[in-house]
Image (cartoon, rainbow over all chains, first blue to last red; front, side, top):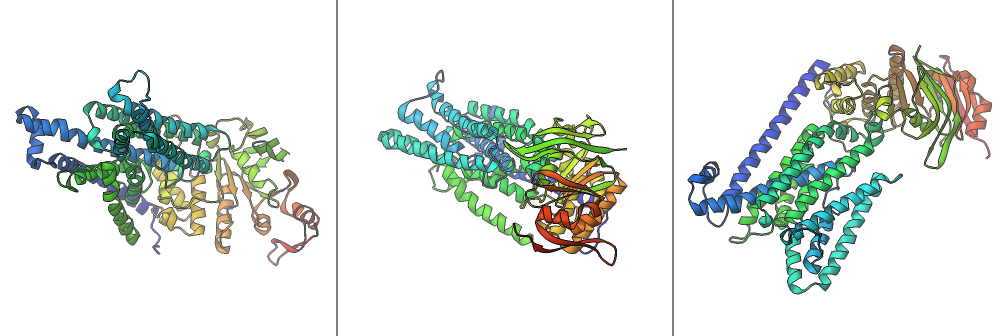
Length: 352
Length: 264
């Protein structure tokens, strides 16, 4: 603690400096992300220089056929998907942690991914799917429906009178077990071939990325982000406790309701397209909190950037880990993310 | 003159009624009313009801305007409420919590809301008035218990309410902070002509700082009036179940000396 009494003017100046530092941090994260994206596109079985990559991206018409195909049709969709999924999952996790007042909340820990797996399992093992959905989208459609439905279930529960936030979290955890049991049952009765497909699906892979899917996810983000931005101050106030937020005039239950709707959309679309990727939604927000604190004007974009960066770096690592083999990214995120996260926690703790 | 009138107020949680048909003499601006009574008497419930956090029946009028049934956003313009404690593990600085309090409901400050710059100026001016400007950029988790309570008070005051509701602002504070917080509450109540209602367990603090006491017992108002009228051995025996003496110390402050619990 400082012994000298800083005047209000000094504090105002300090606050301006703090805001500037945080903006700079966000910009730095964005730059790192751009670098990681380029690196991701450059990495693969046929080596491309970073300069070549930039060239092909800027002038696709001038590039040679094979290089253009590799960059534009194979690597760029994966790389962009990694960024968008990372951002969407971390944003969903950040909002979830705030409105549920629980640092362990994430789309993964509260059953969204398990629900998606169940939807996928139904499609793969039993061929049961959403009507009117074309065969090619059956898997994604099913996964989306179940993931979305699971959060809507949570949301419905949150509307019940007397159901507190703790009950909501416990209910989400119960959902994880219920869905996992159902998936296990389906695995038990599945044919060997279906089982293999299912296991691979649940590992989470960017190899399912296509431009139309990217478009849908980008659209989901574009729709949701303005609403998140509008709720930023309210979310900040909610961190001071529900009663205090209520006394500030924040309608906490409406805020929670809207947030869960956004969370369900973001996480369901992500999980439906790339499968189970667990770590990002939990750790992206924590990294952001350590970096910029919980003023949600900075916290939310920082969480999105951290998640995107983590998944993008994981995507690079997934190509390098076993030469010649694309390891499913769901496996890599935790392998890459845990050490980074531990380092972050410890360096931050020492500075404190 | 600003006043808060409470008539036939019934409050509860779900089906459980905690406070029945409470009516009080009008609470005047610039005066502190202390809610006292044993655990479970309904003190905090009454306070939360006044803040609009519980479904209520009856009437709470501020300058004639009915507050019961008013949407939270509208009520929050007039009434500030401070719960007992701040949550742990929040990565916000003191200044940021005040900005959050100001900016969370833009509708609460005219149609246009308050700009971030104006909000920061107002928050810093308040922190200076409370003598904690040096804590503006300190994280909540680095504060001592007393400092946290001051920060919580600032969050309530920064919205410039007309009614200030404080739930046990001195619990968990050391002697010095108990006095500092209550003196500050008293000074601000006079300065800003606030209608202040405080839940207090410490009857000595209540006697010294409150202008009026409301003694609650089992969900009903048992007595109200000036401290010397309400803090009597007979009432203390009846409401708290203790044999107690009420004496004036050498400085003339009223002191409650509880001697023994009475057999139930």
